[in-house]
Image (cartoon, rainbow, N blue to C red; front, side, top):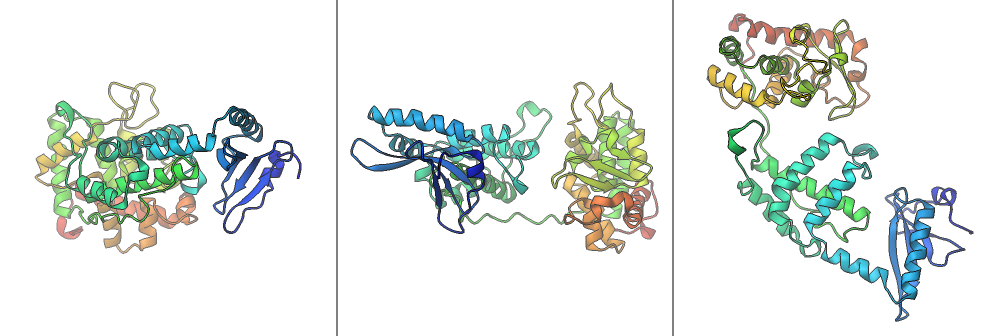
Length: 419
């Protein structure tokens, strides 16, 4: 067919099953292999000193250009002429690779944008941060030194149960700010998902030969059912007053109010830029969220809180740190202080989010509307056009207004949202 070119590789048909090859007529043994997944990799076919036909992978098309792969093929053919066997060397390298080495490979390549995640896009920085935390906190300490070839499904299920049991749990260092490494079913299941995903990436790039995490039954976490009752919201209202009087950080207090009045995720609130808010039309334009860019409705009560937050230095954030140029990180401490004053337990950012959604359901709004308000409706739904949707604007105003009335001391009997 002639010399391999970008055009010929791009036009190469993807097989329905098995694999297909396209060979270069100028450099003997140099070619491209296509697989049903759509991936194409450069390969080199040759005979070693023993006369055995061997094949080695040079790299993935897209990561390597045709000419870069050709240069690699020429170099390896030169090594073969000198008695080397690249395929055997690669096989031995893959056989000895450890989970720790695969994790490091994944983190490096995901950070550089070479690996594609959901919707065939580069893995998001927020996703990579969570993956890094699970890798460093749980996966490496428990199985990092194990070779991938020797790892079995039972080993990964044991890792999962060790995480559930808290073997990798760690307290906060020196009692300082920030989170801590915990155990539990939810943490364990997500760690297994991360391990499965990174090994799948490694298989696509021919770094490992198998994925021992495939087929592992992930333990189910407990469903999130905790929500605040009307009485608990009233108790938080009084706690806000006491906390303000005691000098609690006003940025943290405002952030918690916004969490409760919007149902937004904590990352969305503390990372919110002032320019994203359109107060007149009642929406926030998030350029990038857990489910991609969104236009989300926001009620007047939440807008009033946001507009009351003083600007810090020249930072674009509503909730910026008092001392460094980054988002405020002290919400967990402020939340715990509020809950201690209010005498309530088990309140997390997700509980505040679930409370907002539950109030919407109590008020008779449909599941589709509630999902749109919370930002996890189906793609193509009205959440993408909320600035044009009067019904959603009215819905978010009613829900946030009802919660705001409770925070302002309205009568519980007339605004009951008990669980």
